[in-house]
Length: 598
Image 1 (cartoon, rainbow, N blue to C red):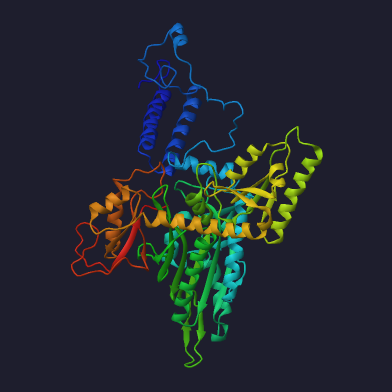
Image 2 (image 1 turned 30 degrees about the vertical axis):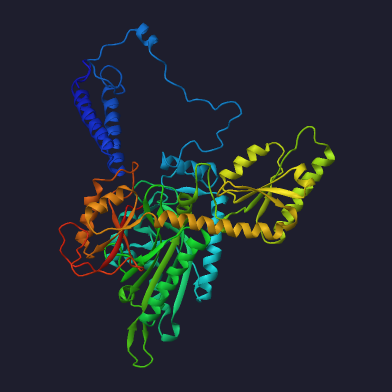
């Protein structure tokens, strides 16, 4: 593309550079390259255009003034007028609002997910990329998780504490293997006002290196053990991959437990105890089934001896998601930070055995992905901020004042009776919204049960109940409300878990050859296959499975990766079996579960 005739010298040189850089940007975008690389290329393009304006005094434009070639003939004004005008976004039909979702889960999962979160008032966007505002409707779910888990770990004598969010460069880099895994994601503070800091300070990506220097001071004798601390805090990991609310964010909330023991057995016992608590969080609170297992050597926590995990399944995308991890660190960190105690029998110095374990607000996104539908959220009753909403119906201009007041009183009485038995309930008495609008609003927000009460229901001593999970409408007698509603909430919780478990088990396959492996991936399955455990094999499996990936743009993991070695194996490794990786003749050590993953 030649520069305009009026441009020569430095301007012509910059013109050619701009055209070339523009082609680079377009090529990166068409190939769906790394977002950081695209952003860097765009910045170079914008800088070149700025130089061009400085050199020529004019804003750079492609020859011809638009985005086309200079050889393209100019259109006549009359021809332009004949062109079909661009379609404007269609306005909703009369009486229809955009309260509900406009994207379908099965058609456009990313857009559907974003709409569910924003329209249900779970989350709002923020002006720092990868960071999000948790609104009360979602934070209440995190509160229920905190309340349950905190009570359980206190039964294990774990105590809560808080350490600063800043970590020195020296402390962070003390465990080389550990920091190597986190290095690309560490955010650094380099300035205070206009002054450069003498040494940059990291914002914690995790707290091992923050806490363990203090452990070395506090632990001197076997009497100081076990030391069991937990903190509820925020973490910053400056992800450059495609951000997704709750699932992959630059800042998130979590709990992180850090414990130290005198013996290996104590530490290993606690690893499993915590993992079982994480399973209970997902299955008993969020109604999301999980697979428990051990991470491969490639996927284990950097600097640890081994990592145990719970993996959930998102049927809509056919991908797994790591839901919580419990790590045994062995004596790796205690040797690095000199965390020792004196053995009471030998008098010798011994290094402690350590664990770390954590669960994050990713739990909320996982729950939404599993249960929500095209009408909005579907909340499991145990984590719903409001479990029952009461809506008065049949309030028309013809309804007498005393009848309306009696209806409102009936709704408030219904609310009080449920509150007395511990149900979280709201009576929606707003008169500026119709019952139909309220039905859609609370359905979008995922409230498990809607109760409708009208004048006719009052006369019949009954009420109409609608289940959010199934849409089933049931007429119930008023007399048994204190027993019937709590029982139904328990039934809904169980049904949601059972439905999700069926979805997951229907998509877990045992395969022993790579053609079936690839076919299963294309059919959105998780694959349990014989595996030798070698890191090079694992890398090659991911590369070989990338070519068949057909996921939404920006998908974090296109190829299949190892998820875990399930504790519950689908079978025994038999003589003659081979590793699932084509060409590997090594004897498998176990069945490993693979899949595409968030």
